[in-house]
Image (cartoon, rainbow, N blue to C red; front, side, top):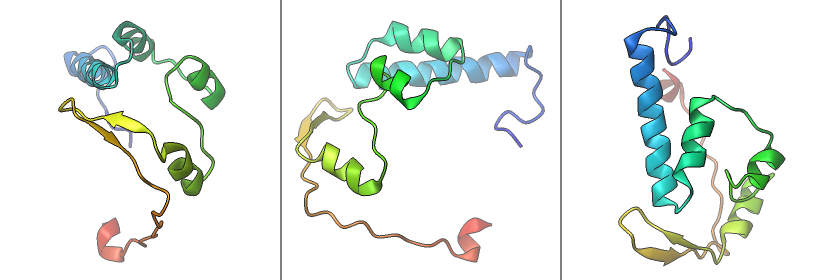
Length: 107
């Protein structure tokens, strides 16, 4: 079942869901120093993009094909936290540990 379940597309509740999603996208864009108008327009249009298109449009920072590649690309990158502070990521020695879900976790 979809997140919206059986909510009709033209209902006030669906409009609320769309507005909440747009507000969340604006918050993320603002906190990451990105252009809010572009994000809002893309969210409102329900646009979909390939990873290459998203990269070219600045919707994503990079493309990675494995967890190790993600860590490599993020290593040494300085990020700005939501509180405004900056932190440099040091991920060169990070180990990836897979945790299997138990039957209890799934239900």
